[in-house]
Image (tube, rainbow, N blue to C red; front, side, top):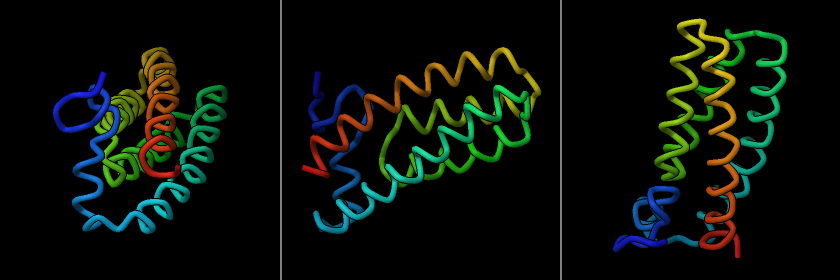
Length: 120
């Protein structure tokens, strides 16, 4: 359900996103495409790093995804990536794996919103 600002329960703050781009929808499309490419790579890195119990790599990829999510106005995605970064920093392997599952779900929601509002 959309709130008064036009985003799905904090999944994507499209008003903030387009305000920062001064309404440039073509730039928004380019940034959205770049985000999707990068996010797909980062999610794969996170998955592989968790399988290998490489929390240093999890920390780096989560940090990168956190920044990219903030740039895209993906509020919950940024928060979950930050939580994953913290779990990796504290060497909490099980907690990191649980947070990654949440991250995957949130990424699907954000990608859906991104396609709906930016890439269509």
